[in-house]
Image (cartoon, rainbow, N blue to C red; front, side, top):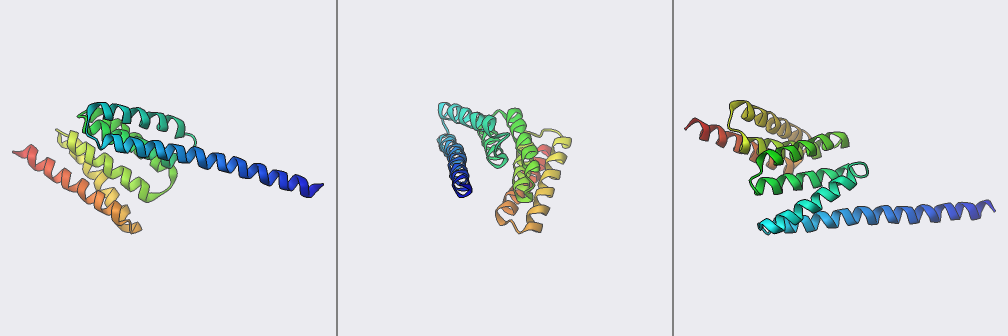
Length: 171
């Protein structure tokens, strides 16, 4: 009798786990679709991408923070692409806040680089560029410390944008 209950419990856990994987897989598929729409560089496609990102972000904030970070980053990239720099900053700030809750330094490094880059794009004042530089420097230090080559490249691009923006504002 106890064996039967144990098997039943294992069976139920397997069903629940499969549902969780499927739900996570659906969110990832939705993000992939949103990324594809964003890469079309068309206003209508970007609007659909934003809706996908928002829906996934809302659904995953309490379920899978990694997926939520990716959704917030996608929102930031799309809004930046559309020229809504202040709105993109809000999305990137949320991505960084969510990433810091995950406890993965490389995920946080990538989110910090995204925010630093966006700050450099939007920054028309030295204080904004200083904040951007802090995010870029922090992201670079973590990426190098943890051996994240992709994250290191993103942080270097972030720094390059800050340097470029500083030069452009001096002219």
